[in-house]
Every structure is written in C-alpha cells, then in structure tokens.
Length: 151
Image 1 (cartoon, rainbow, N blue to C red):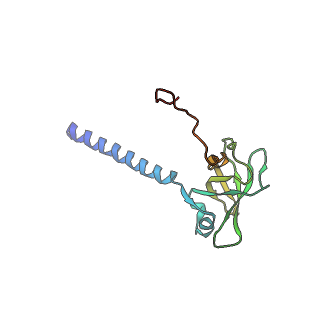
Image 2: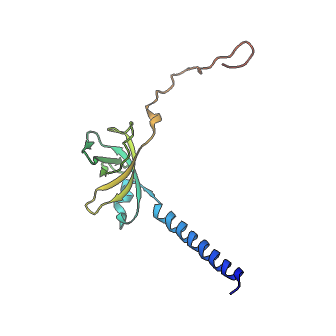
Image 3: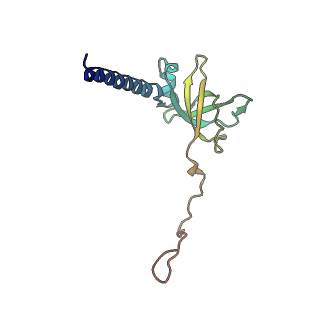
C-alpha cells in the first residue's frame, strides 16, 4: 500500500474519531432550562441534565456538612398556588453570597428517583434587583467642566 494511502487512512480515522468525540461531548454537556411546571411534567427527567429556576422559599435553607437543602417555589400566574421543588446541593463550589431566602436561583443537576432535585451548581440571579432605584429628577454623577468635557 502506498505511503500516501496509509497517511490518508490514518488521517481520516483521526478526524472521524475527533468528530465523534466532539459531538458526543456536546450532547453529554447540554443542559436544558425548564420551569418547575415543565420539570414535573417531563417523562424521564432524570435521564438528562436540567437547569431549573425559581425563588428560594423563606426559611427553607438547611446547611449540612456535605450538602445544602432548600426548597424552590415558582408562582404560576394562572394558579393561586405555587409549585415547589426540594433541592439538594452537593456541589463543591461555595454558594453565591446573594443566595438567601427569597432570592432567585438557577440550579443545574438531575431529578432523583425520590423526587428531589440534586444540584451540582447553583447561581443566584439578578443581583441588580438589590440596587436602589434612582429617585425622580436624579442627575448623573459626572459634571461638565468649563471646556465642555466631562470629569
């Protein structure tokens, strides 16, 4: 077999292997964002990684040595009651400083067979909601100088 043919066969095998590894890696790391209502309606939700968001229920955060447990809730506009989900955080990263009661949180993980959501990553959403709203007639911080430039 000529050297060029061997080289092309080996190069093709390498390219095909790398392509296969890339596609399977992307599929494995894909995370689907769902609401609590959509999560509870899924048919085999434990089969894939899921990101679910909601508000941390007041007084539900319980810290253990190896995990943090809390409850997410999400108010449905069409219903008077809220949907809830018990979450067990087992990740290695520390929780965000803004993670507290009534905070909005995004949890990445899988739904366990016992109905609890096992999160490996937690994000607290929208820290800007803690900023004070500007008062009526508020002026910007900068001021114009005599040359027309701002400082």
